[in-house]
Image (tube, rainbow, N blue to C red):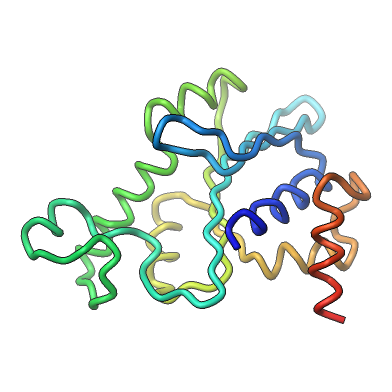
Length: 175
């Protein structure tokens, strides 16, 4: 599901005039999408991560390593987390997804400027994580809204790109 969602998000970005790179491998780490668009005299640069699940069963963020060691729970434990455990998990997740030095170096090689950090989600089991992500400056998009914008003509710059066939298949199920 995640790779299909990434392809739809890439189609959305392309149709909005962004040049994209998807699936950058950096050892054990990955960047889902980097997108750059020239808008007049300004360059817009976006780092987009995609987490798409139809039936989420756990938290977006793993339980932090320190807490796992001290209480003996697994990283994907679905047991209720305290507010501090949620905050620590989100902080660790954001650092891993966006702030690793190797990721910053790649972004700065492509564009020496400010990048937005964004997350596309479909369904989430614990919406309070999204609020904590927003507090960290992460822009949240819903996959359903992205698909809707593709289907109702809200994307105007590029009529279609490489993900058009997948998008057409997705739309068959909605008619």
